[in-house]
Image 1: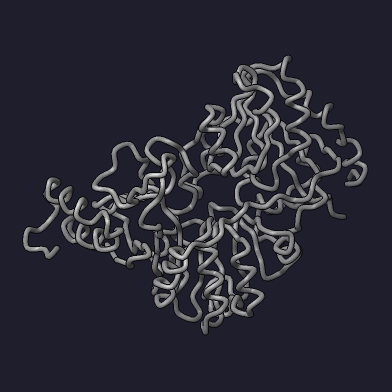
Image 2 (image 1 turned 180 degrees about the vertical axis):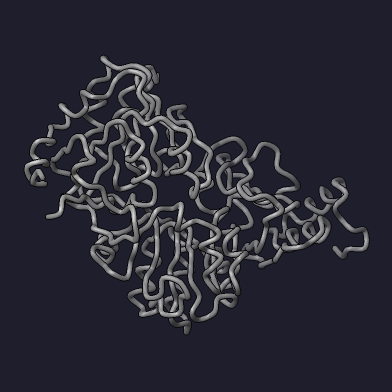
Length: 445
């Protein structure tokens, strides 16, 4: 049997040497978020004039992406994202990124059954004594993509945390074609917007629904982080984690002694996640931490798994809802903002949980580019991408209230949603509901 160190040396290449395997017309997958392979991206971009129609997929990349920035005409590299970060959203606005619709739990099965991967490239931790590389913060999706690839290239990032896993958190040197080394910048982290007074009010409205011993899924954004902060300051005890994304909100709960996982009825004493990114302190916390376990999102986001967890509380953001209870969490009109991600996974799973609840949150208004205040609760969608169908609407929350739409008629939904809309828009929404024949004439204004 070949020594793993010898095998490593045999497969070690410079970024330029490894980039030479990419051919025109290839489908190339880059690791997501902090596992984005920056050295290989630059090396492939440097081959711009030699390549055409190289199609790249990734998601939640903080940027910049050299292959995109080097080719504004998209003649050489076509970039596509499964879930847009703020940087990728700006690329979409410039016509330099195309969104790929998906539900996160199904992403790897898409690859397994339907997609071509000519070259897969991911940043990983340094190889251990047994010849394994840890997939770190990209464990949720990366192993399935690497398994499908014709050629596997690993880029060693010395800053990545080592995350313990349930399964599919590592890859062996024998399954790798090339290994690339080189210095990296410190890990980026997704900036979280500072919480507004509206965010705080929304969090306060949700808190009474969360019991001690609950297991939490907190989505991306300021408001879920506010909930984490308020929970850290509350009297609740023995909270658990089962989440698509582990972030600083959970670190705050840990520091406050609230995150023990002791009441979880599956994976007791373990916080389970598929993706992780946050602050420098956060990365130090998750590094080789036995209480934080990563697993593929096909498992972590499975509604059947989520539904087994008692008192599962799911808290996510959305961009808008209409009076029928349809929810958009990923677009403003036709403008792509983020993606479906795991929101629908957890909305479904939490509804199956004994004692579970799923909350979709939004401020009642937003301000457009012209400075005009607009309502997030709309009469009906006209082009907005529906993330959550009305048939799965559960709790919707604004700073004006929290309503449960389960089992409600169209007129009841209209009344409930108008009651949590900003007062300045309520009369307008009532008139629209009347025109749409979903407003009871007996309803009080």
